Length: 152
Ligand SMILES: Nc1ncnc2c1ncn2[C@@H]1O[C@H](COP(=O)(O)OP(=O)(O)OP(=O)(O)O)[C@@H](O)[C@H]1O
Ligand SMILES: [Mg+2]
Image (cartoon, rainbow, N blue to C red; front, side):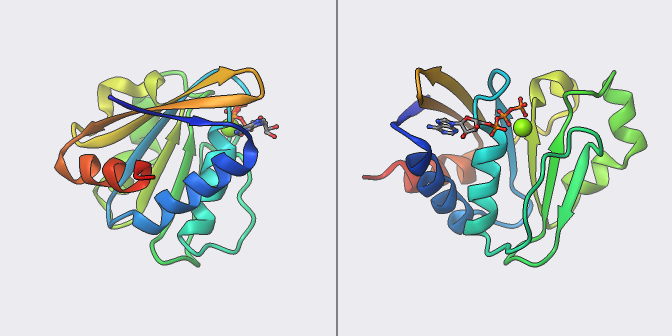
């Protein structure tokens, strides 16, 4: 596991943009952390890194928002309100996961049983106004991604 300390929102923003620039087709990023930890803030920065100009809004009620104006399509999920993993199949989760687009899933631990084996888990922890991001790369491509974005 690799972790990185983010002193303020600017640090979160630049790390997110770096991740966005390095993302590859079909990447799956799973974000966990308490309410207000910064999952959506990180996603916004990743979207900027992907070249998305549209405003990213939290998909808490829609479960998924799609953005097509960047280098790769972004499917942004927030599964906080999902009752069970079965509901994810109803919205076509498998098709999203198998597509060329990037999937970012807030509160992914709720649907842990249906997450793909290869993915990047990012856990965000509060350290006062600062945050600590813990990366668990599941698969070679994600290990390289973490290596790239945590390089000083
Ligand atoms: N270092 C930091 N990194 C990210 N966000 C920070 C940081 N410091 C303060 N913040 C603030 O924390 C809040 C993060 O909110 P955000 O909506 O991104 O959280 P979230 O994890 O998506 O919450 P939810 O569980 O409700 O979806 C924002 O108000 C942001 O301004
Ligand atoms: Mg959020």
